[in-house]
Length: 320
Ligand SMILES: Nc1ncnc2c1ncn2[C@@H]1O[C@H](COP(=O)(O)OP(=O)(O)OP(=O)(O)O)[C@@H](O)[C@H]1O
Picture 1: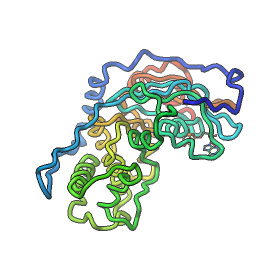
Picture 2: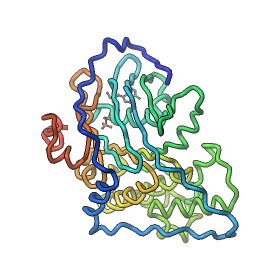
Picture 3: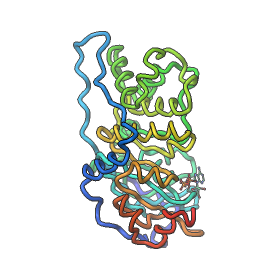
């Protein structure tokens, strides 16, 4: 990434970070997390059927990808909001970003798929590596980063007048993916299946997306992100506008999806972080200083025996 530094970075406070040992074997921890959710009975994902022809093989899924932020700093104008944050988000794992309001979690998330640069006053420094390749490399296209690293926002944002079907494939055009009708049918069905919405909408694919409930709209947005076959899915408080039942369905969906796509979620809900994530990173911005990671590692360990007293206070609801 080209460094764009409005401030003299050498003057920035050193990173106060206590790294835990890396999270234990991700698949073992994921199994453990799933077991905690068993009473909710995760939805079955069925292989989608081709409807117009069976000559087209399903697209080969890309291998799971890891994402790594290295020394990421961020500014809005001259206001520095992140200070050299480094975090590895392992392949096939759900990583939760937690911390009080304003500590830079969403900014970090947006830097992970090059959305931060959409804000005119915004600048950043550091690197973001997708399977070791810097997404900010001058040789790499912006659209490739957005295609590989999808994003779901706090508030469901389907195109309300557009049909459910067209909502799902809306991202194809935006990312320059060409698909014939067979391929579109396949992507619509498989993406809605993966997002746990297919059964509820398969008989009304031509109805407007705006006619769905809030939880269904959020799953439609997840399906829209999945249709371009991203390798990483970023989710910024995806359940904060939803009721507990819809929240549960989204969490179940995430636990299914993580078999296919690496997930990073910002959440204020400590129970949610514990239910879904294998590893956690605790962000904090002390008064007047930019946000940084105080502690990160295995979610269970972060909640049961945090190293830093500030993490202990936060996960036990003493502030934030
Ligand atoms: N578009 C923007 N222009 C200027 N400042 C911004 C902008 N977006 C965020 N900020 C500032 O950057 C800092 C970090 O904000 P950010 O939204 O990343 O924090 P957060 O931890 O995600 O907060 P929350 O949990 O409330 O969403 C805050 O001081 C915020 O006011």
